[in-house]
Amino acid sequence: MFIVHLGFSGFPKGMASVQRTFFTFKGLKEAGATPLIINKISHHQDSDNKKIKIFEGIPYVNTSYYNSKPISFLNRNINKLSGYFGELKLLFKKRKKIDTAILYSSYFLEYPYYYILSRIFGFKIIIQYVEMFSSIPGRNSFFTKINDKLIDRYICSFCDGVVPISDFLVKHIQSIEPNKPLLKIPANSDFSKVDNISQSLSGNYLMYCGTINYEEIIEFVISLYVKLKENNKYTGGLLLIISGDNGDSWSKLRSFIKNTSFQQDIVIKSNIPYSELLMHYNAADILMIPLRNTTQDIARFPHKIAEYTAAKRPILSTNLGELKYYFTDGVSAILADTYNLQVYYDKLSVVLSSRQTLDRIGLEGHNTGLRNFDYRMQGKQLKVFIDRL
Image 1 (tube, rainbow, N blue to C red):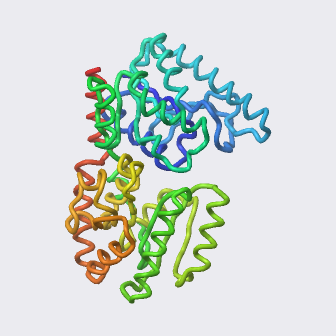
Image 2 (image 1 turned 180 degrees about the vertical axis):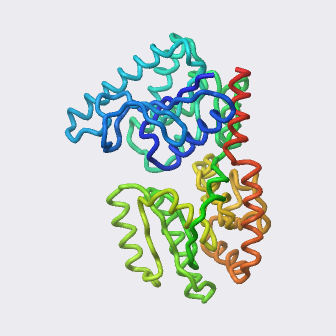
Image 3 (image 1 turned 30 degrees about the horizontal axis):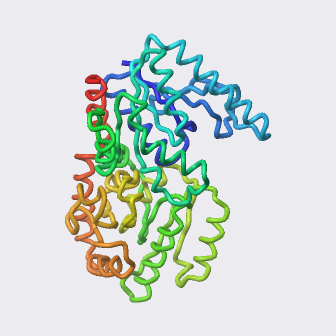
């Protein structure tokens, strides 16, 4: 069974979307499928122009003329066109081998485009559905709003099956096309990779990991930390590992920290190796991922939750959305009833004094993650799903 990735480019560098794709295809490979990830657009500066490469056993191909992202606007767009043409040429060449394509995209026009190609070349197409796009704040331009609404309304019209990430999205799919084949696959991770981290870090800190685009969440985490410190509920530091290159958001964050108490105890890291990230997870007292009572946060399933549980450290979040389906407050996670600073503070004040309690919750959270989020089990389920289409 030959299965290809279509849609976003940039593999193997990137955050949640890249990690989800990597573990999806790694799981499929271990289940017996032959995977290939296609990058049609050059997003990074590569040191060579080798088209076919392998990342941890997963082959990927760059179809644009230049592997490296051109500097000039004109060359960049010409290179994009060459990538689409190269991808089309590759799909034609492999048309007799390809069984299924998995599309992961936030651009509506790619849905009918790849669906038409799948009908012409004779392969099935499955869509990764990880966000309720029309609920994402900040996507306010006219064309973006139209794009997002079209995806959420017509996603089932351009595929043979859907892989939603949450119960919310499952119910949404069933409401617009009840008979569309679907398989829910939540966040995923490689639990053995985290277990095999031999190096260790020492420290006493709370930790948050996310993108700079979640300004509100980052400020919430900082405010919670300051409140704990001011009331002598915690003596350690705060580690923020933030990705993204939004200059305005970075300026706002630095200004916010500058006007914050205990700023000397707040450490920010960015663009660190994945192995170092895992070491930071393993050494944290608590791993924080506050969720808001919004459609966006209820519909999605943050990839970090799978990584957090793999580290055997307790998760701090809100008891809503997917969290309430998998975790129990005080048993496998620390879950506040609402997204509220005082509620979060009260919840942490109870457990921070007991390392034994934190270790117990972290271990039980790890067991929950191992049952539900390990990529190997998900790969077997996805292969069966594809076989049945």
